[in-house]
Every structure is written in C-alpha cells, then in structure tokens.
Length: 122
Image 1 (cartoon, rainbow, N blue to C red):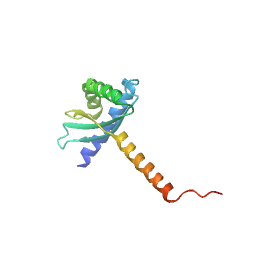
Image 2: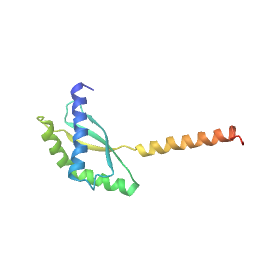
Image 3: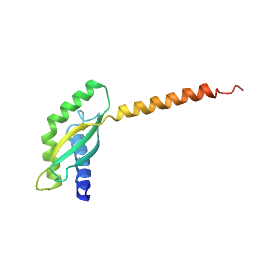
Image 4: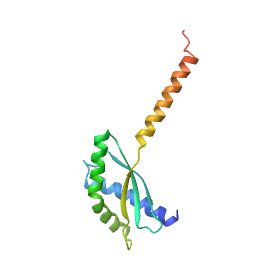
C-alpha cells in the first residue's frame, strides 16, 4: 500500500468515526470504527466496524450504516478535498468472536493448570 493510500485510509477512518459521533450520537454509540483501507485508485474505501451487542444490535447497526453511507461519503469527501470522494463500503469486524475464543482458551488453560498443580493448603 502506498503512503498516499495509507494517509487517505487513516483520514477516512478518523473522519467517519468523528462524523458518526457528532451526527448520530445515539445510533453510533455501540459502533467502533476499527480499520479503513483504500483501493489503489483511491475510488473505494473499505471501512471496518465492530458492534458491541447481540445479533439484533449488529443487524440494526448494519442497516444504520447502510442508510447513512452516502451522507458520510459527502462529509468525508469535503474534508479530504480530493477530486473524487472515495465510495465507502462498510464491513463488519468480528472482534468480539476473537475475544471470546481467546477467553475460552485462557479459561481452559487455567482449568488444566489447576488439575495438574492443585493449590497447596496452608
């Protein structure tokens, strides 16, 4: 990825997050913008997001982001001052699933350690 792509991606990530917090504070409360990556021609930007909550909350957040996508594009395009504002495509990051897997592995290791080395009684 070129330096320009990295800079544009970083700006898009920051500005999308800021625009969501300022424009829709209640709807965007559980949404975290995690990453952005821009195509080589700077015409498309994939923005990753994570949602805190169950499947119903994630579905609601997905619909919300789809609904405000064009408004976010115009807001970010005005800030970037580029000839063409990148088209924003949202993709959900499942970081909660990864956290749950790590926690399950840690719990399993703790159980195995307790069975192998039981705590000493004083």
